[in-house]
Image (cartoon, helix red, strand yellow):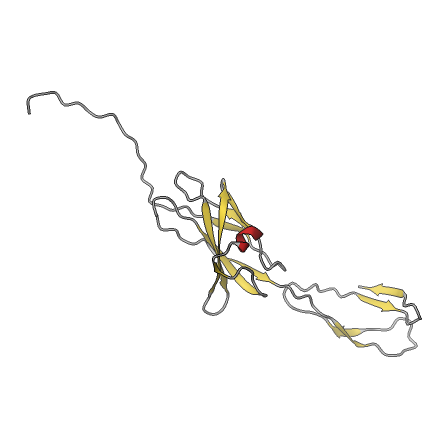
Length: 178
């Protein structure tokens, strides 16, 4: 108002960030481990949270959240370890035999809405198949045929090994047939 000349401020730079990081699950496999390790890719841009949230879901008709695990990223990768399972605050600290899906989310310091990754499927299977021999009778055939029942669940080996033992005082392995 006094006719003083106006001066400009120093320029300030800023960034507009409206998108949360989009992590992905890289590995989710059939396992006998009830606390499986998961690996994946996480965001590491300025402001991306240093942790990811991994959720394990049942594959029931209506999926149920089974466990929520927090893992710390290292650069652009993360791994869920046994230590992360031990620290689970919501849900199961280990899984039972079943089929599951797993998703991961990661937020940022601007609270942009995080969306879940595409689900990855996996199974926990801690029970080995128990094959049985249904015909082992006395015979004069020196190359007898054996029949029986083998496991046929997903992941069961299609090959069965039959071991033939002598019935002497000290049993001796006579033959192994695969």
